[in-house]
Image 1 (cartoon, one colour):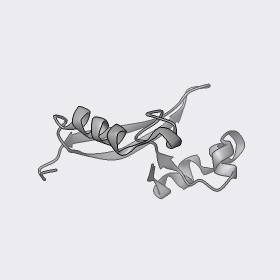
Image 2 (cartoon, helix red, strand yellow):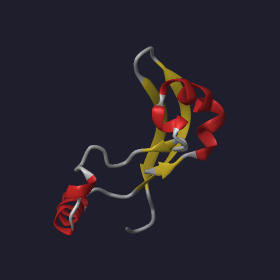
Image 3 (tube, one colour):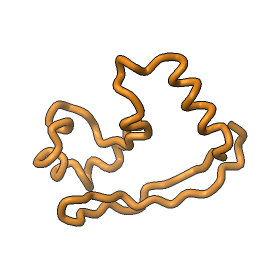
Length: 87
């Protein structure tokens, strides 16, 4: 989970009304790994398998540019480009 605190002015009120995790104090965030495995099954072997499956994926930079609500689905637009830094 990567906190995205800068989104709170945009999505905070919506999250408070519709997202139990927001009411529990979880900040706006981007979930990167869900549902990979239940926490009690997340072993070092599972992490190794995840790392191996992503080893050919180049690192990239992104920026959040827009948040929208489409009724039952919320979306945050993003732009990404390959990173110049090595992993």
